[in-house]
Amino acid sequence: MDELRRLAEMLQRGAISRREFFGRTAALGAAGALNSAMPFAAEAAETVKKGGALRLGLDGASDKDSLEPASYADSVMIVVGRALYNSLVELAADGTAKPELAASWEAKDGAKTWIVNLRKGVRFSNGQEFTAEDALYSLNLHRGDSSSGAARAMKAVVEVKKLDKYQIQISLSAADADFIYVLTDARVMMAPDGFKDWSKPVGTGGYLIEKFDPGVRVALKKAPDYWRAGEGRGNLDAAEITVTNDGAARLNGLVSGQFDVINRVDPKAAALLQKTPKIEIVRSPSGWFAVLAMEIDKPPYDNPDIRLALKYAIDREQILKAALSGYGALGNDHPVPPGDPYFNKELPQRKHDSDRASFYFKRAGLADAKIVLQYSDAAFAGAADMAVLLQASAGKASIKIDLNKEPADGFWDNVWLKGPFVESYWAGAPAATQILSAAFRAGAPLNETHWSNDKFEKLLADAKSETDEVKRKGYIWEMQAMLRDDGGAVIPMFRDWIDAHRDNVGGHSPHGGLDMDNGYIVDKAFLRS
Image 1 (cartoon, rainbow, N blue to C red):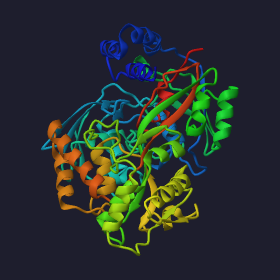
Image 2 (image 1 turned 90 degrees about the horizontal axis):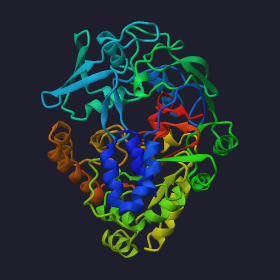
Image 3 (image 1 turned 180 degrees about the vertical axis):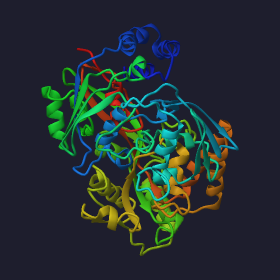
Image 4 (image 1 turned 90 degrees about the vertical axis):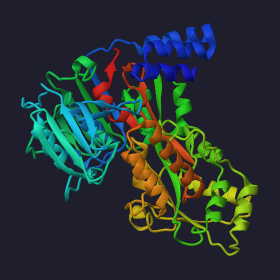
């Protein structure tokens, strides 16, 4: 039944055709499975309705939030931004890049130059037409000495120039076959040329700001003549976000009918909530992963046998169950999630093995090896559980691990990227080469394991410059194997995004990018009644 619903959700978001849907459901179990699939197929083909006001109870906001897209850092403002503005490119639920304000694009010079053709006839909420000047201005907001959260991803851009009214050229310092995914970033939104008054946003999105109380409440109203209305977007008359940081309060608000939609459902509550009448869970496998990062240039983690000992000592299945109640996937000590098209499915899944852990630990020849894991509740929910469980499972292999619980205040400034063995997490990235570059490229500012390998660097460069999918796959698969076998990251699990809504809400689909349909919930949702 879960597989049937998953296929129906894929059909609903366009990831598979109706023909493929019925073919795959039939293969699951002939007539019985197909008959069971029929209600899901009807749900997937449901007619979008217009009107109504959506009430969202969301976590992920601050009283310092701004309507300026470059400043977006968490779920609430990403949802708001997706309602007010549009990107050049949309990250689809199947992980592919789809046209948004860009009508099409083409990579040239071995993916070092990108030609982007802009959609014609789109207007901002002030009536001004969207053209190349607006695209150039908006992209340049994230370049140079910009404080934008997207500045690091845009650093490779050396020039953006206008070719004509509806066409621009983006030149990179080095080839990057996945650069188009940078343009899906929720902070890289299109605004009018020269626009600066972010307190009164002007965008091409389906909604306008009615009220903005940072960290408390955001009210949106329907914008006239939304250019995506014919695609089943911008269906609501209004939407109101109530910032609700307490998980229990969000759940209670959903069950009581105060909210139509909530995010960040506690995995421990998800199974129970799923049995609650009129409530539906939206579970999205994602690229978010927990990591225990060993700095491989510092003892004892400079010894590869110590690293292997810890990788075999950790009980991944136990941690996935305890920390996430099973709402996730096992990690294999590299950052590419199982749902990624470049996931190395032939790489054996490492399992807990006390005998092997003990073997490698003894082979390291470091009888006085001092292993201290620094962790904090600030890292992620379940960080403490993971630390304690690692300590216990390592103990079965006679590996002693001391735990240092660090204060939440200052953890990211004072401990992360400074301690030799530290728990943290990554939210993932749209493309495998992006997360490999950000977390493991030699010299990358956030390379928390200090991984540096000449062969890996060449493979990464080859993967980024190669447009042949078969060749790219080989490079990316090999990098995953290198990190699994020799890297300094213990990656025990990937986490699912867990949203929930009342059964009167349609158009809320799984998306591995971020919670709330990668922030597109207000743009895509509709009310059935």
